[in-house]
Length: 252
Image 1 (tube, rainbow, N blue to C red):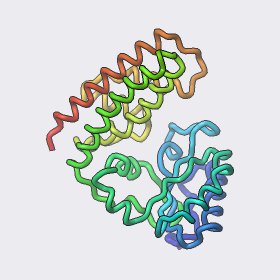
Image 2: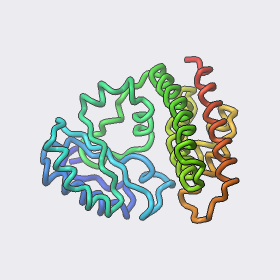
Image 3: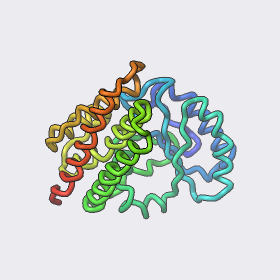
């Protein structure tokens, strides 16, 4: 039956992901049994952003309750999961999801957009989110990103590799915020990083070419010059600053 907890559904999961996910499910069921209510694949594993042997496989596991025994059980799977590029799952309960709609709206929006529940019932399909909560989270996180960028630059002492890594992670972290901003304006949200950056640039009148370039560095082996990284850093900071102003102007 489609909703049986113990029967994974693989139809919408790419072939290369099925074996590592099956191993994760088997490990969870062996250690936690019926305490596992659902397992949902989220993020790039379901989009064209995914790169075999490079990208991580991200999941959300809903348990009937949290506790140290559950943490210990999942921690025992950490090494075999890591070898298969399976990130430690996000652990939640149904009650936690319901109580967190007002503070994690951006994340839940991204889960709703790109997810596939392969075990149990879908925990995200029916979540209702308030636009005011999402707008406030976007504002807070965009302004926090500005702080992290500047602090990261100082901490790196201008090291090209470290600043490059900072820009790569910032471009990735910016993406769900931009999708949330598009949702606030009832605009269809792309599922891939670059398409999201391009759509947001067009809709909000913000130059995001530097962020697009930075996210491509993740998969490129070329040596970055100090000039490349410095120019990109200045442009990304300016873009995030303008986006923080744009979120203030969104009327709900």
